[in-house]
Image 1 (spheres, rainbow, N blue to C red):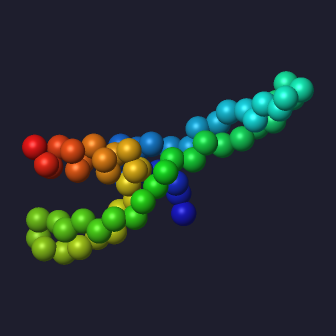
Image 2: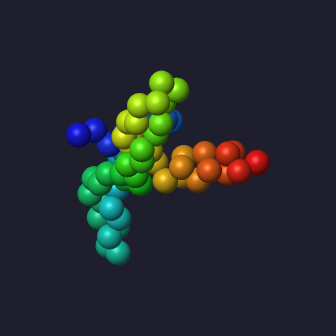
Image 3: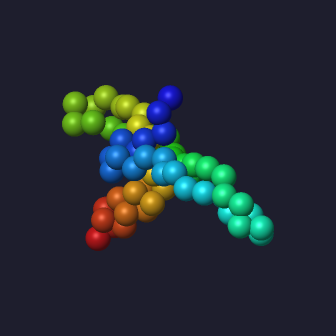
Length: 64
């Protein structure tokens, strides 16, 4: 199962864990994905994975 936002295409990023002694080890920053149901134009319902930040933006745009 891929961790990709199906609206914006946000993907995991790669960075470093940095210890107090400044040792660096690789880590991944995963997007905060949420599964939501979307009703399409033809009346069918589909589940899509959307980042939480994208979901906030969509709700903000729909409330205007």
